[in-house]
Length: 202
Image (cartoon, rainbow, N blue to C red; front, side, top):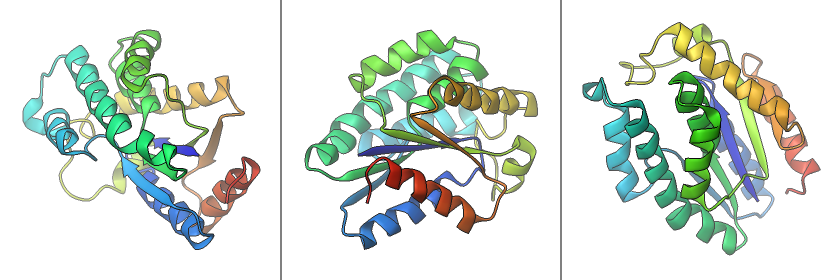
């Protein structure tokens, strides 16, 4: 089973993924908790390139292709091997982030970025994508430390990204779960776990 957690900055993706991982592990499942970009040796170098503020001015397509390169390595070395041995894979960000940030946020076009992502992943699609929805002003207020290159984009940019996630979810409600990430975490975890049970876990 492959589950992706998506959403804007400060939505709580990593925390909710960790909470679900703990519940599934307690139920006896092997869980691989991972993230994009940067959860491989090569990916860590890509992460630095795309998120470091010193990369300001990076061409939008160069950015999209760097994310695709990270994703190709991630799927090849982490995600597919884990799925092949029967593990549950939970990832903090996947293809939908590229569709939202580069396809819509950068204006490259969802279809074009989707084609690149499909090539990079061999067409691997999550069984479930959890979209943690939060207004950009709230999400970004939760961030600690200096903003990275994407976090530092304008509110207008982040609102486009937010709407892109919601639009994607609306096209395939059977494969997405949208939750209000401003609600208490115990409520969010219960809603997510209920949907996970519906698709056959734990």
